Length: 434
Image (tube, rainbow, N blue to C red; front, side):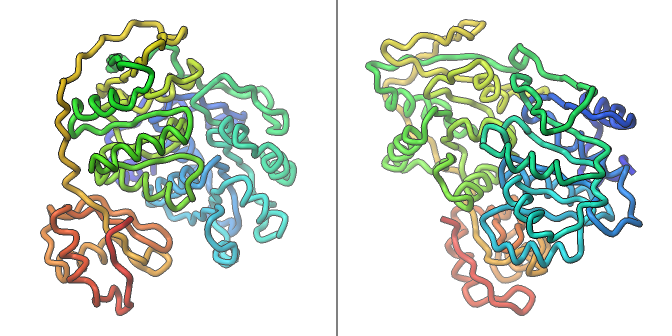
């Protein structure tokens, strides 16, 4: 079965950590899985779980708790892409509870969700917990950091027939909470104190304490490469965004002060290439499905070695190469936890603004719950939107909406052509995503 799943996912082979997880799960013990961001932890716990599901049981067998809506959706998407016969549901805030309650009338084998929403369902009794034998706390330390201890404690206390607990994290700095009930766990640890082999460390200096102009010059120097800019505070994210907006440079922002839908759109546009620059807080350093990044910029230095590792873990993953840049303002000193000295880079005296991405994002107000799939969208764009296949990029179909990467020079014309068109005989709003 694993081979068929890998074919569905278009993965040639599992990595060492994933193979170790599958082997460890053959034992009946609890498991703590520690591995860097981007190393494939989701598949590492989903593959063993699927092999233990029983299709004769009509109720929930596995519960997966994630600290954020984005991560919960990501896990659900991976599970669906595996192409198994088992049903999965995902529960999180930001959309109507009524929809989830209706979905749970036909219970899934695997239930994924954020701790707050799952606890709410359990208090309402919207699904049977008697058959849940496995619970997975993905990125459990982030859930604790986000203040979900009370909800997770309540959830686990109500699962009377648990046989296995799996906790995952990209950090070993956090102690396992007592309420998890983990006893004598088997630890799978693939974390390392050293930076990835393919990571280069560089620095640029700024005249004065305000580093904005140095940052802009560095962005121009990097050109059209994919770049994550990390800040310690959302105010800095907004300030950098204002500068780039004034310069006419397309980009995205991501921080905890945004609405869930705004954060979701930012990640989608970064994934599909509409945005090649994402300015963010450490919220994006872990647990999110974003593509291989060429550059990480530390606009503000992280406060801990752990945060520094997680930020840099967004590039040079697996066997790829990447570069982390430090911007040194007047009076700045290299962090004490830095083990190597960076190479200092001299920037151009006159920055040359890079071209914006060749992609933009089309919003379609219909999704999986409307029985819309990628094939329907591609057909509409080619037949009615007059696009060629190579003018259509990544398509993401969510529950009630879809997002499509379309060549930037074509997107406004496509919107005009599709203004009065229907998908599956239903009128659907189609516009350029904001």
